Length: 146
Ligand SMILES: CC(C)(COP(=O)(O)OP(=O)(O)OC[C@H]1O[C@@H](n2cnc3c(N)ncnc32)[C@H](O)[C@@H]1OP(=O)(O)O)[C@@H](O)C(=O)NCCC(=O)NCCS
Image 1 (tube, rainbow, N blue to C red):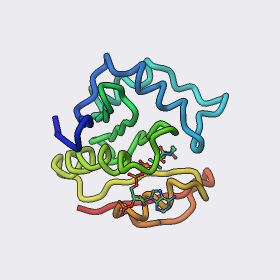
Image 2: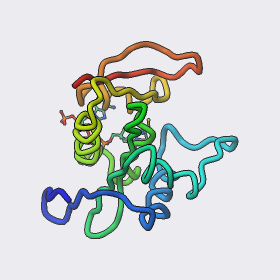
Image 3: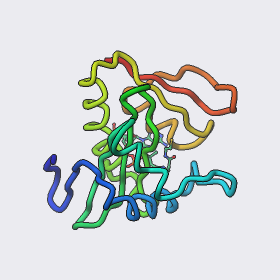
Image 4: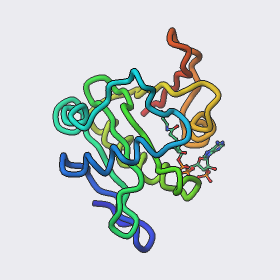
């Protein structure tokens, strides 16, 4: 568990956190779940327990941001901040332990894709990610190196 500013806690996510994480996932302005994207609460379990790990950020005991990375592939599966809490440094705070942990697993390179032209692109560029290009699905691809 990492201590941050007063009232803020960043810690590992467990399956009990999934309902709160999914509420955050659904409360974003951009990179929203589309009707044909089948992500349910069940979907999170292997990403938290087997193929990856997750971190949540609590403000006064309420989860308002989370990040999930896959250590087998180096892919960032999710990074979301509740829309009411954007721009407060929470994205950076919840991302950091995940990135550190992925590199600690021996990965030299981690990667992600995000909606092209979204504000997330500015965030990734501000937090150490390198723009690679547009992938086959039309999304913007980024990488970060150990
Ligand atoms: C993208 C997102 C994770 C950013 O989180 P956030 O908490 O608002 O970002 P932070 O406040 O931690 O910002 C961290 C840094 O990025 C910069 N930044 C954030 N958004 C930016 C933007 N649109 N353009 C340029 N810089 C930006 C901040 O200025 C800050 O820089 P600094 O630390 O040097 O001052 C969040 O807005 C979000 O969840 N958006 C909707 C969902 C989404 O798009 N997620 C990514 C899906 S792949």
